[in-house]
Amino acid sequence: MRATPTNPPFVIRCFIVMMNALCDAVAEHGPAGYVPIPMVNRIWTRLQNLTTRFLAALARGPIQPRPKPAAKPTPEPNPEAQPDPQPPRARRKRLTLPCREAWLYRLIPETGFTRFALQTILTDPEFAGLLEANPRLIRILAPLYHAMGIDLPAQPPVTPTPPPDSRRHILFGTPDPTPPDAPPPNQDFKIQPA
Image 1 (tube, helix red, strand yellow):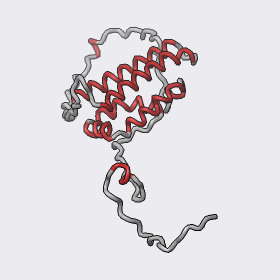
Image 2 (cartoon, rainbow, N blue to C red):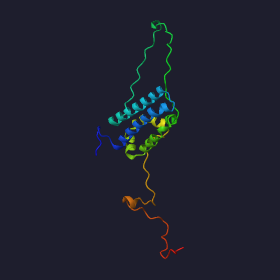
Image 3 (tube, rainbow, N blue to C red):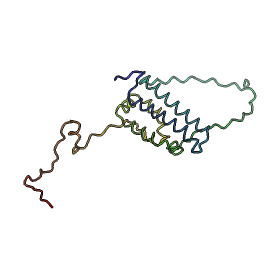
Image 4 (cartoon, one colour):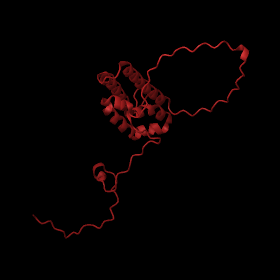
């Protein structure tokens, strides 16, 4: 089945399901783990916004970087035209999210299953190809993977080749690996009963 905007690739659908499961785990287990409700709301909103930004950037596709605009000269301020400075208003303290590594996983340990799933999706060749084609996606996903304690590679991972002595060629019909350099066993060898 071909991927269209209404029917994204399978790995993207898996990512969306995992993000929804992560939001559900935060909403359900956050208050049970004595996380304040405003913090749970902030985390949930951040995860939803991150998913929306990721899907929008994926739909736009790779974008060429814009050239930096030339700096405009700033006019010199006129000291006579300055109004009297007003006293600064007291600011309300904003609720901020933690910033240390794996903070979300440590705050709500029940998010561990999505941590494993997000790590597995990262090793998928199709997902790695999407990240390689559009580096903006890596910047969008960086806060999520940092919050879950997963290293997001600068370069997408390459799937390793199977070792030469694997039996993969028997199961999946791939070409027979090269024989090892060890000498063949002696044909006169007989197994004696114990």
